[in-house]
Structure formats: structure tokens, C-alpha cells
Image (tube, rainbow, N blue to C red; front, top):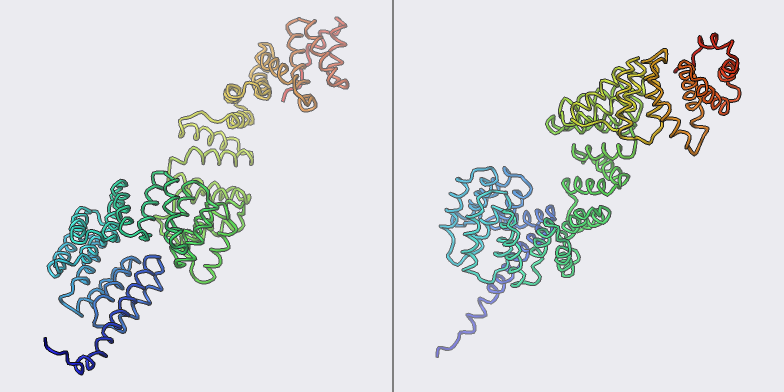
Length: 550
């Protein structure tokens, strides 16, 4: 056996140690960046990858991870430039070619992307599974639709590296994209079998269970992830979604705070957090957050939109109206909806600006005719308040036409009053009849039908109002507060007293005028009627007198 030359060994030890250290540091740096990427600390991850590239400008892996981060953040032009630089460092390296294909995939050029992927596969060692996973991840990151190719590549990777949890977790992601929950869960569980601390897989399983409203199993998997790492941001994001799905918005916003705390406070997250606060009715907190962001120059149309609705639900037209107007100035025209104009109209109405309220309701109707029914109802209410009887009646009828349904009881009541004020007594009577059909035990419906029919029968000879006054008396007499119905009862008994007098039924006439006197002893009309009825000589004179009608 040849004797080892110790001097030669000692000569190369420094270089061996240096290589091992540099390789270890490189791996740790990339791994650190990937971990930050996983927990959505994108700015921190970018700094790590940029530092790595600046120190290792001839190494392709830094460019690939930096470019992938650009794709995640939607910076496709920057990503393409970064991948191109990475490719130039090593023409035989496949990763940045995959990156270029990823950009094409994101831009919808699936054929061009696959051409790049095939070129990368030609440069890939048969034992290398990373590149197969990178290509499959491209379909996850870009929402491309041809998932079967990604599945084929991952199955090949599984055959080469049978216990690689990343392969199965990526398969889970692909199947989730396909809405194949059972296959997604199966692959996520396989990933966990090979690595009990593969937290991404627990979160993936939980997301699927939330979608199918299996909250118990969702919670179990989230708890498993957080037990392994209480700072794992994606778990808090899914936990917030979990509580959101259960309509427990307060707990949802609480966990979204933790998600932001353990990840990174990006504009998209700010919008989502403000939305969560809004949904949990934490309007003051949402307003405070949005105004703070605006003061930092971070406001956008989505945040402004939420702000406007927060002011609406706080019944604050003073701040709500300008908030909506500012949103309209910031948003793209196609993003402004009929609902936005509707709620701006409601804010104007709350602030007493009826003309601008109606103007915005009409704008909403022009954009979405399905909102016509409710908005014509809103306009009718405004018209009733302003005594625009004809406009109110027209709005009520339009609501009925557009919805194809009967109005509500109070809407028919108001419609009847509008017609009555316009002296259209037959139409008013019809509207009050509809009110009675819906509210047969409410005395006022019969009272107003009596008024309408009294106007349709001004001499009271036909007695058109008689059955309605009688029904009114029947219901109103049982009122727990007689003072509220006294005036109506006096009027009803007066009408009946006069009607029976015209019919020469003096006995019933006296009975009804007597009821008037009981209710209102100072009523001169009743006292004169009773005096005349008891004195036949004055009956002729009494015939010329009629009860007062409204």
C-alpha cells in the first residue's frame, strides 16, 4: 500500500475547508431566502437574493430565485430581464431557461413556454428532480391551465425521488388548482408522511377543507402547522379564512393581524386586512388603518372603496360622500358599479340632499336594471317626503313593474295616500285594498278606504263608505289606546249617523250620533243631529247638513 504524503494533504486542507464553508454559506443564504419566500416576507427575501447575486454574479441560482420572486409579485418584465441575466452566466444551466418559460406562461404564451421547458429538460441531468419541480411550480405560480403536463413531470420526479415531500406538496398544489380536492389532500398527506414538519402541506389541506366547509378537519390541520411553528404566517392567513367562512369576522381579523405580523405588510394585504375589518364591523379600525396608509402615500382605489362603505355603515354622509367621490376619481370606469352609485345616493339621502340622491339612484338603474325595483322604492320614499305625489305614485308603480311582484303593505299604503292627494280616489281605493289584503287587522286600511269611497259617493246616498267605516269601528274600538283612534271613530259614527238618516232609518241614525256624543260631548254636529232627530219638525232642515269629510 502506497504511503500517504502528509505534506500534500496539508497543502490542500485550506482550499478544501474554504470550499466546504463557501458551499455551506451559499446553501444557507439561498435557503434563508426561500424560507422568507414561503412565509411571504417578499421584501426580506428579495434582499437576500439580491445580496447573493451581488456577491455571486456568475452563479445562476440567485438570478433564478430573484426572477421567481418577480413572477410572484407580477413584475413580469423585471423577471424576464433577471432570468436572461441568469441564463447568460451559464448557458448550460437549465433553471433560468425554466424561468423564461415561466414568464411566457404568465403572459399566456403556453407554446413558447413549453419550448423553453423542453430546452431546459434537455439540459437537465436524469437524476435531477429539482428542474421537474420548478417547471411544475411554474403552472402553480402563473395560473396556467394545462396542468396535465405538470402532473406528468411530477410523477416522473416521484419515480426518481420517491420520498421527496416537495414533489407531493407541488402535486397537491396542482390538484388544488384543478379543484380535485381528494387528490390534493392525498398528495399533501404523502408529503407529510415523508416530512412531519412540512407545514405547507398542512396549510394546503386546511384550505381544501375550508372550501368544502369541513371546518373541524381544517382547524385540526392549521393547529398542527402552528404547533410546529407558531410564527408560520400562511397558517394564520388560512385561519383568518377559516373564521371568515364561519362568519366569525372578529376572530378572522384577529388572525389576519397575526398573518401580517409574521409575514409582511404589503399593499395587497392592507386591502385584505381593511376588508376583514370592514366585514367584522370594525369600521373605526378600518377607517383608522386606511387613513394612516393614505397619510403615508399608500392609498389606492380599493382601500378608498372600503373607506367609503365604512362611512356609509357609520351613517356618516359628511365623510362618506367625499369618500365615494374620491373613489370615483381614482377607480377605472369599468370598476365603478351600480351599487356604488346606489350607496352614494343613500348617503345623499341621509344628508338631506334629495335631488342628488335621486340623481345617483337613476345612474345606478341605468347601469343595472336589476336594481330598479329597490331604487324606485327609495325614490318613492323621497318623493313622498317632499309631497311630490305624482312622482311618488309613478315610482311605486315602476317598482311593481320591474320586480314583477306586489309592493309591500306600507308601500301600498303610501301609494294610496299619494293617489288620494292627487284626487284619484278610485286608484287610491285600489291601493288601500292591497294594503288590507296584506294587513287585514290594521284599522287604518279600512279608514282610508272609507275616505276614498266617501269621495266617490259625495252625497253618501249609495253608502259606498259604509262597510269600511263599520269595519274600522270594529277594529279601532278594541284599541288599547282609545285617544289614538278617537278622531277616526267620531268621523266613522258621524258618517253612519248621516247615512242612516238619509235612509230614513232614524233609530240607527240616533244610535250612531249618540256614539259620537259619548266620544266627543262637545261635538255640536252630533248634538244638533240628535236634537233634530227627536223633533220631527226639524228633520227637513237637518237633511241639508252633512258630516265633514277629509
